[in-house]
Image 1 (tube, helix red, strand yellow):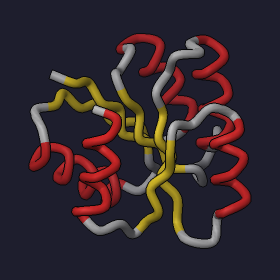
Image 2 (cartoon, rainbow, N blue to C red):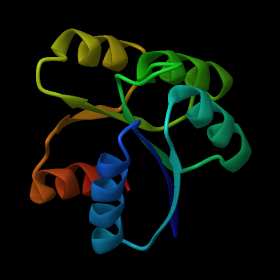
Image 3 (tube, rainbow, N blue to C red):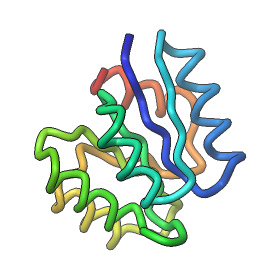
Image 4 (cartoon, rainbow, N blue to C red):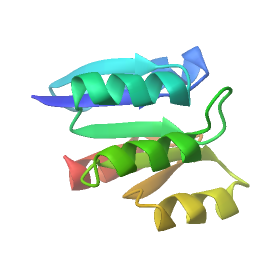
Length: 118
């Protein structure tokens, strides 16, 4: 069973991602509403995969990505971002993100990315 951490400040988006994950595979899921909580939960829980928004209050997804990868260079993080965030997506990939999913996403596209990394 894979452990996945969903990080997004929008409760609705966390629910959409959770539903897609649960329909797709047998997973154990934790949720964080910002980058600060993501860093803390990652350290405690050591998930197999993180799905993280870029734009969030307190600590952005980029900042959380940097902090998590600094503490665990093998952290597997996929960024989720709205259309129009291409420079931030490029930065995230350069900092070690595995991939990105553009929101809003289609379920089949989401599953293709998950199939590749799980």
